[in-house]
Structures are given as C-alpha cells and as structure tokens.
Image (tube, rainbow, N blue to C red):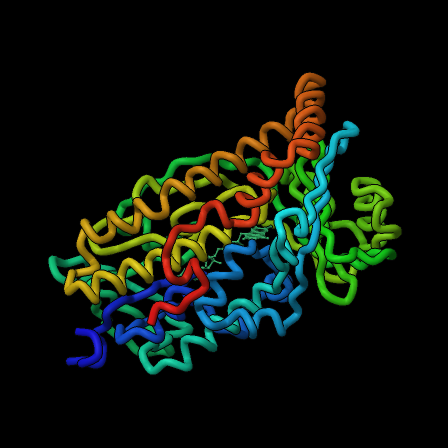
Length: 414
Ligand SMILES: Cc1cc2nc3c(=O)[nH]c(=O)nc-3n(C[C@H](O)[C@H](O)[C@H](O)COP(=O)(O)OP(=O)(O)OC[C@H]3O[C@@H](n4cnc5c(N)ncnc54)[C@H](O)[C@@H]3O)c2cc1C
C-alpha cells in the first residue's frame, strides 16, 4: 500500500506503544515511503513526576543508532552527560575494575540521557516526515490477525477507529497485552528485587565517571548527570527498597552514604525516589500471526548493566530495517519468513545479554566467602588483562552486539 494510501485507516505498520522503542521504530521508518500508525495509551502530560526524571545510560552503539535516526544532536543538546570512565568495585572485597574510554580510543563509553529527552527527540523525528500518525491517548480494544493484515480496533478521545496493516509491532512494554493477545509465552523469573532510583547531588565532582558498587543486597550505581548531579540506581530486595522509599530525604541520604562510601564526598538527595520491580523475562518467539515484538515486550533484563533500552533500540533498528528491505524487495513484511529474519538478527544478542546480566547478578548477589574471593580475583584479573577488559568494554558499550545494518552504522534508512 505504501505511498498510495487507499483508505484513511490503512497503514503499512501499526506500532502499539509509543515509548522510546516504539517511537524509535516510527522514527526509523519516517524517511521511507511506508505509512506508520503509533498507538500510545498515555497522554504526554500523564507521566508521573518520578517517571519524567528517569534517565538511561546509552551505550556508544545506541548513540550510533540515534545518529542514524537523526536525533542524536537533539538528545546531546538536552540534559545529557557523556560517561568517560567507569569504576566497578565489590562492597566486600578489595577487587575492582576501572574502565576509561581512552583505553579503547574513544572519547566516551556512552552517555546518560533523561528518558524524556530521548522520547521527545524521537517523537520530533516522527513529526518531520508526513508518514507517521500518532493515536494518543488511545487504547486498542480488539486485535484480529488475518491472512493478509492485522486489524486493530481502538478508542481515542471518545471515538472508535479501525486500523489495518500487514504487520503490528508490540512495543507496549514488559507486561505487553499485545504479546499476550497473540499467545507468545515468556520464560524468566522475578528477582525479588526493586530498582530504587533518585537524583543525587554529590559534594565532589564526578568528572564524567560512573560508579557501580556491588553490595550483598544488590548493585548500587551512581551515574554522571549534568551540573554535577548523579542518577542513582540501587537494586535491593523489594522489602528493603520499600523501607528506603519511606524514609525522609536526610535519613535516606545517610543510608546511601553508608552503602556507597566516601568516593564522591557527601551525598545529598536532590529529587523524588521511585522503585521498579525487577524481572528477567524473555519471549519464546519474537513474532506470530503478523505481530512482532520489540523492546521490553520481547525481553526484560536486570538494570545492573543499564542495557534494557539499549537492546530495545537495537531491536527497533533491526526491525525497521527488515521491514524496509522487504518492502524494497516486494515482499510481504508481515510474513513469517521475513519476521524470522528479524528474530535471527536480534534473539542471539538479547539472549546473550540476558544471560550475562543474570550471571553478574548471581555472582555479585551471593553471600558466600568463596564467591566473594572469586569476585575479587576476577575483577583484579580483568583490570590487568588488557584484551579481556577491552572485549568486555566493547560488549558493555553495545559495539559487540551491533549488526551490520545501516542504522547501526549511524546511517539513516533512506
Ligand atoms: C530502575 C531501572 C533502570 C533502568 N536503567 C536503564 C539504563 O540505564 N539503560 C537502559 O538501556 N535501560 C535501562 N532500563 C530499562 C529501560 O527503562 C527499558 O528497557 C525501556 O524503557 C523499555 O522501553 P520500551 O519502549 O520497550 O517499553 P516502555 O518504556 O515500557 O514503553 C511502553 C509504552 O507502551 C505504552 N503502552 C502500554 N500498554 C499499551 C496499550 N495497551 N496500548 C497503547 N500503548 C500502551 C506505554 O504507555 C509506554 O509508553 C532501566 C530499567 C529500570 C527498571
């Protein structure tokens, strides 16, 4: 149908969920002739305050994708801070590793950007092209996969609409209703932990360094934000996280100081706290009945390596590119064979990252002396072993997981 729309509600692609991953898919396809509908439940102004202040560590690989989407300049001009170095150390032992961007010939390992800035830049890119329609706030009521198209009924601002497309994408997050509707099962488990987030103002300058301390209850990260501030992500057993959520700022600051130590001087709480329950989850398949999964709808990982959104952006790049290539080749991009190509591009990387973040969680969450000694030995070894350290850095920066797609090279699709 592309380029020559027959009916108002016929599209080439329907994306359910206009979060960062859904918006990235639409932004990637905006310069192509394909018509995209994005169905988003939440009105922009309905973001809870704590959510609006959430930030994401973007790997160097994601920065390349955002360049390919034409939005990196906008993201970088926002409240975004480069991560130039990282210190990882064990709460119990002397072992630690220092990663410096210069060691692998780069200026930065990645960047820390507010989710609101990334989302706004992606939304902006979908408005510049004439081929993306947003239905927001909107909720789908029925989803019917057919032989040639998926039909989605939705309600938006009191009226009912029917959208049709050869393919629908579930980018509706970890509890994806679309994934459940098409019957794609997931595997995984709850970590019994929550990620507690807050903005912190340290007494000493962070100088672009990210800090991650592995404590018995879970990792505590302080990541560099602009104007000397830090973003805290502290993974803890859920009952402890809830207890810390209830404390007054000053009392919480003291607990944080005890847990983090003196490296950044006195730590002052500078914003509201929020806690997010953590789960490992992976879909058994990435497509079924003309519906494909992307982002958290396909996989959720522990935030200890800050990789969830980075994986989602790689999904968005690969899916948009698979669809655009199929369109150019005159193929039906909702067909199983085409979507199988997308799954083969993304599933190995997502599974690998899920496995190693889970492995780190177990290695660093264990209480035994033997594990503590192993951790310390391992970190000291990595710190001294150049090639192994550089391999880990490339993996952590999202460069090892990148394919050979145009967006992953920082180039637009069209
Ligand atoms: C504490 C914490 C820290 C994290 N830190 C990092 C980090 O530093 N780096 C990183 O890469 N990742 C990080 N992550 C992971 C990252 O936040 C997620 O991977 C990312 O937000 C997933 O994006 P998404 O667009 O797939 O899903 P979501 O952000 O969940 O977006 C889904 C969208 O779909 C919409 N929606 C839901 N249901 C419907 C429906 N029925 N109809 C229409 N729309 C619907 C929602 O309103 C939402 O806009 C962190 C996660 C946590 C919990």
